[in-house]
Image (cartoon, rainbow, N blue to C red; front, top):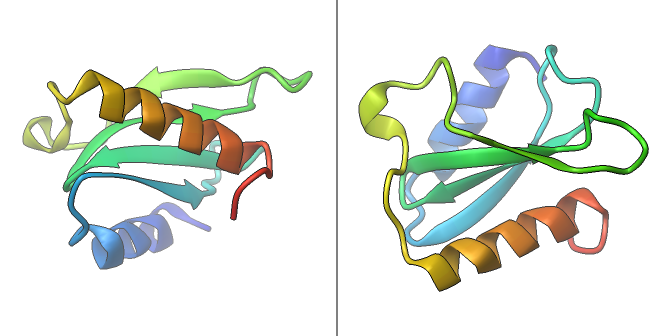
Length: 94
C-alpha cells in the first residue's frame, strides 16, 4: 500500500472515537505495522522492523500535522490500545 492509499484508508476510519488501531503497510516498512489512534489523532505505530520477532513502538509521525498527534490520553486506555496493536501485529487478533 503506498502512502496515498494509506492516507485514504486513514481518512475512511478517522470518524471513530476513543482508542482504535489500524493494520497497515507502507513502502518504507518491510513488515506490516499497526497504527494507534485516539479519536482522530495518531498516537504512534508498532512494527516488527527490528527483526527476530521484536516489536518497536514509534510515537508520532514525521509527516503528520502538529495538531494531528495525540499528546495526552487516558493511561489505561492507552495501555489497552498498545496491547491490542501488539496482538494484531502478532496475528492473535483480526
